[in-house]
Picture 1 (cartoon, rainbow, N blue to C red):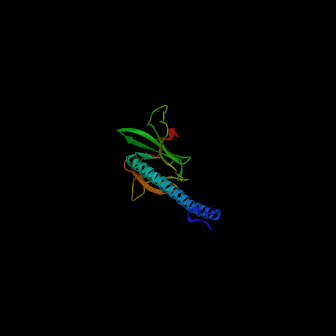
Picture 2 (cartoon, helix red, strand yellow):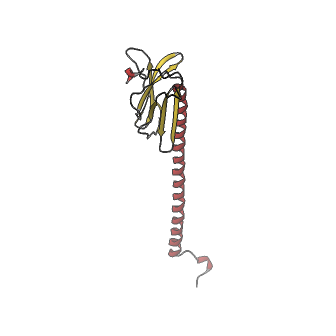
Picture 3 (cartoon, rainbow, N blue to C red):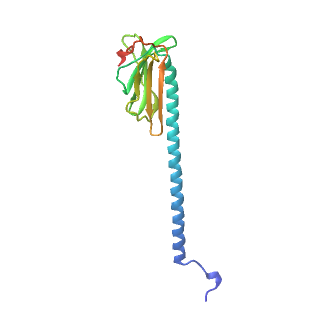
Length: 179
């Protein structure tokens, strides 16, 4: 007969407790990894939405005072340009979506030879295949418009900007030399 002080754990007790501990740790680790994945996904979506919002605000200011929006390239293109009035001087602005990045470059209107700036990214993670659409003046609205449809994995932003310095008679190919 054994004394109470000699009592210990059997091999079966140790194996059972180790198995239970492994199951608990597996569940815990899985839930932690799931929380990290969810947090990363939410952060990625938040950053994409923020970038799109800022880019659209910037474009709203620039396109609103444009003197003309290019009809070439055609509707649904990945690049478009317009003649903007910045600080009382005319400036050509070109937008493009390439490799998932919405970028912009500018050059002075009428300058020869043209010296465009480097492409400046405005937003990333864009999956739109046809983000830009030229909308010509109508009988109801006599201004040129630029419709933008930007999609990311997380969000979709659509906006139509009206160039208030245009009319039915405004040119629409001011910045062709930069293409």
